[in-house]
Amino acid sequence: MPAIRIVHRTPLSPSRAWHRLTAWERHGAQVPLTRTIIETAGPTRVGTRFTARTGVGSITFDDPMEVAVWQPPEGASPGLVRLVKQGRAVTGWAEIEVRPGPAGGSEVHWREEIRLRGLPRALDPVVAAVGRRLFGRAVDRLLSGA
Image 1 (cartoon, rainbow, N blue to C red):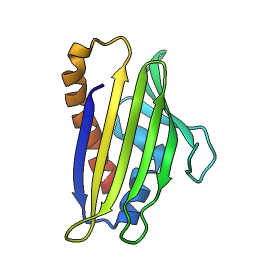
Image 2: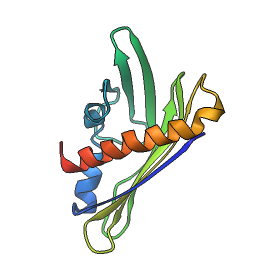
Image 3: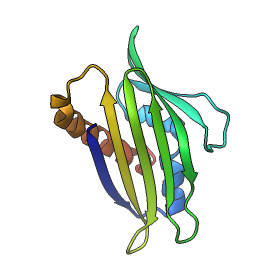
Image 4: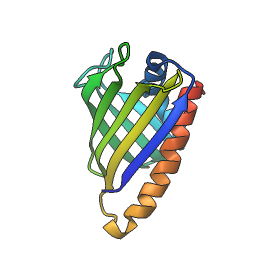
């Protein structure tokens, strides 16, 4: 599986950064041609399910996810959410960790391993590069409040 790793520093407090990064309904607006469908009533907890649907018209694919770990940041303790991807087209996992920054603010660690079924492993480096760009931009926009 291609590994995607992103580190982002922000002046936002860990709790504010966490809130912005785990507002699942906002994720779809950050990825082109994608919308997020929340399937579980809030608040988010272990077992929360949502789907990122990407495509145009009838040509779409779903990326259903379930929250497997939910530990919001508290005091000096970092926050961690782990999402398990449960789709037919996209499998793997994603983690978002929010730590207090070394000089204030927060440090965000986004880790993801994805498999796109039907794509040969020889394309893993391309998938990882596109993922870093796509998810890096999403992190920037989510943290900026866009």
